[in-house]
Figure 1 (cartoon, one colour):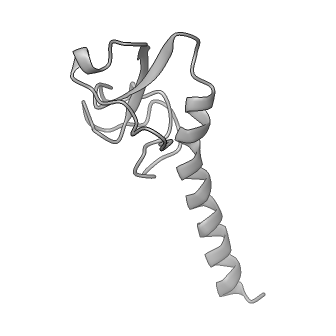
Figure 2: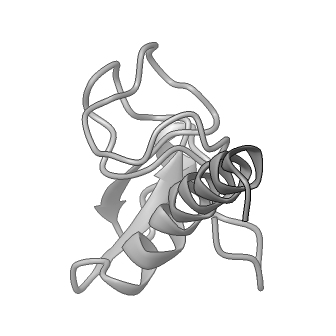
Length: 91
């Protein structure tokens, strides 16, 4: 493997980890809580961005970004103006 291939493989791996972060978060949701997109304030998101722009909690840059989520009490997301993950699709 030449250097360019190694760099491409490393970038692809980092991208894949970033995208899987939110899916892992859903599996680790606290009991009685659900992911709610579009309600997190800047710096108060609970996990990775659905857009893949970052892979950590607390890294959102703007309020109410539709690609950022936070855990809220089950059944309250839509009332707060947020959106739930699409059925059958983990974000």
